[in-house]
Image (cartoon, rainbow, N blue to C red; front, side, top):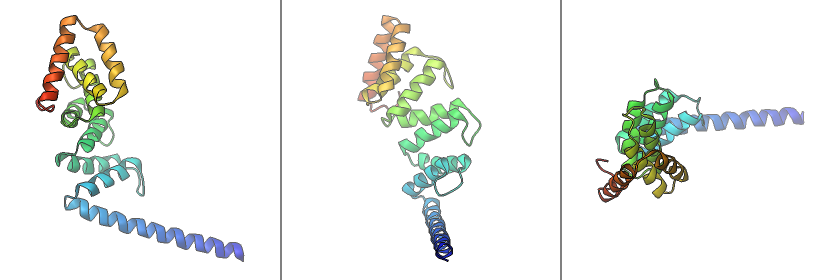
Length: 181
């Protein structure tokens, strides 16, 4: 009998929690549809990770896009990732470059690193070691350690003139607060 009571109480509690999550989700969706940036990001992350909802990359892309269009660098970076790896969208490096660039121009080190990688590999953009070095070095300067590793690799592949050009571009970018880099 005690086991039955315990099982029933667990069922009632889990049903209550599930209903509560559903209410919170509806509240978040309402706010997100009204343009609330925090709600859009929270929903996007919930769908991307499958937290409280079934994992759904396509829906995550929808909410990240709305947040990214409001200028949120983390949402822009996440859209770059999703386009790079084909999560919820057809894999395509060109939109990935667009979103990484917007986030990188706001100082997002992860976006700067990924943008550097794409320039190095010639994915979504023409291969360009100078820009690859410049963005990798910016990522490193902003605290992303793998940016240093990529910068070192690129330095081995580049001429002295290319390295000087990349450093000059990097300084110009910092002075312009990354706009137009």
